Image: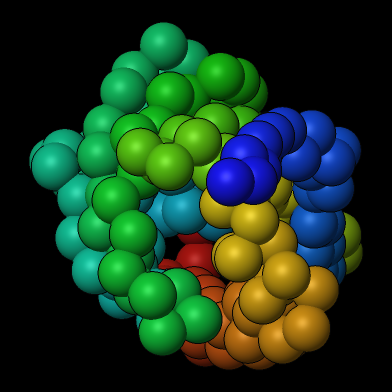
Length: 165
């Protein structure tokens, strides 16, 4: 009789962060842009992935926590967010984690630009399950990039319809 021993070692491959940064000129003041984009309840009005949040219609400040359901790249996800930085009219940053260990960092930056705002939205994420990392390398990042581009176009259109400050 032969005995075979199978040893399984965890794969400790470094987790790569994907970064998607997009910039647009918006015909609204930095204060108007900040007030709108830092209200997660409003995200579903302009971001195709956002399905809903558990907070009211308020601009969230550093230290606030909230939860969001998204449908991104065809996958439903639940995110638990913490607002890390809030400088009205300038910068807002929050980080989220998911049950599988995946993480997200979202930054909004606003700079006065003529009669409007130069707005930069940066999405940084890591995917923990190996299968999702492979899928991200192959095609998921393209879908998330397309969602981000659509979101920015929607945001510009939405904010262009606001009355001037």
